[in-house]
Image (cartoon, rainbow, N blue to C red):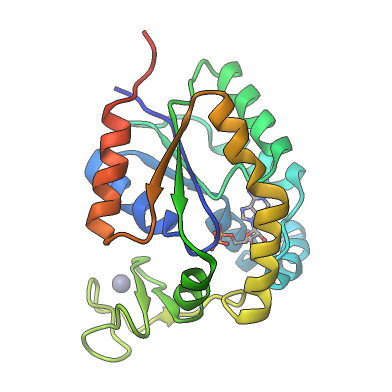
Length: 220
Ligand code: ADP
Ligand code: ZN
């Protein structure tokens, strides 16, 4: 069965962590526009250079760019796509609806991960990831067992994102409230929305998402 879902929520809500679990547990395909944009910027292309500055400030890159990135990836979805960090504007949401219907795919669920603002600031300002396997860590709540070494793969390539500082985070939050939060009402009105408690333990969040997905599916 193929299920296509959106993970919606402010920066630091845990979308990436849950997406990775869905990839492992269900063989779904994660489409993270944030990851695609970071790949584009490190490839040094013209587009990459343009987006790097915007991203570091915490602002949104243009709809045109991210819709283009998603369009290129919408094939061979395995057990389904997880849209992680996309759509982030009403324009992107409309575009996704159109892309999916053009390719005969459905949108089965939108999972809103709810987290309060103070928790977001705490989470994001301590965050770092493994550059090799993508595992996510936190200075206080989830440090590596051995300082500087990834628990999962043993890599010492641990990185902090350039936009995970307090200034950029404030901008990212503002962008979220101004431009992305209207999508909650948009998908509620389309009967797609499920809300989960993003502050629960990671396994509990996964269980809430699983319950939402198993109660959904492509309408025959
Ligand atoms: P987070 O959810 O923690 O903010 P992401 O990795 O999803 O992180 O996004 C990082 C940055 O990439 C955003 O702040 C924004 O600049 C850009 N970005 C990612 N996805 C989109 C999108 N759908 N539309 C516009 N900009 C995006
Ligand atoms: Zn690793």
